[in-house]
Amino acid sequence: MTAAPFITTSSSTGRKRPSFRWRVVDIVVASVIGVASGLVFVAWNIAHEPLSNLVAFLPGLSALFGGGWLFAGVLTALVVRKPGAAIYGEFLAATVSALVGNQWGALTLVSGLVQGLGAELVFAAFLYTNWRLSGTVLAGMGAGLAMAITDLTLWYPGAGILFITVYSISAIVSGAVIAGLLSWLAMRGLARTGALSRFAAGRDVAAPR
Image 1 (tube, rainbow, N blue to C red):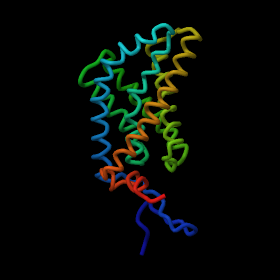
Image 2: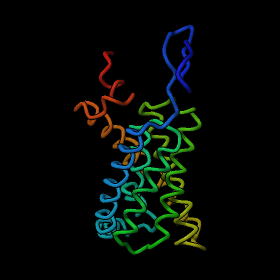
Image 3: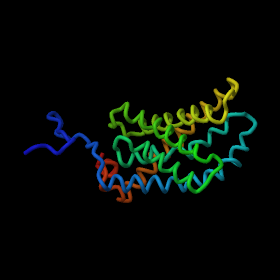
Image 4: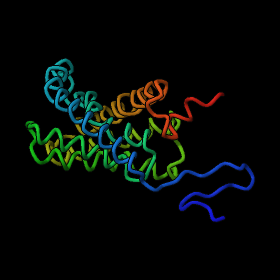
């Protein structure tokens, strides 16, 4: 009998390595998460400005609230655990936001693609095996850094070093907390309901310690 494609078994542990092949259920669930996240983006587009005014005393600190646009890719990857999931989830959410309409127009797609790539590169660096809180927070930070690079290039060209520094640090912190920590907690909450029973994420949470 031959092993299933893309799945191998470790002789020392007897555990199966994860399959990187997308199933139909992976595509469906990733799409649901992406679209639902896009609707959250739409609400965040409205809420972001008044929240940013609360920290207007220090230019650049507004990026602390940028994590509200960064969680889609991280959450999708946490659930699906396949290469490309972070990019797919974040880009789909950005597409929904752009189609509904926002003040950034088509450039929203650029932001979504780059932010998804920022998270994707971190998961890829761990060969898609680190789905613990540490890896998730790092992926959120990667998305935050990607957001800072994109925003500073598109919206704040020629900004001073103080603004660049504050904005970048704020974006990374926001990515770590909102896109990283909160996405990890959301995934575990979903898993406890049984909604992720067909995914490794659900089995990991349900497995006895």
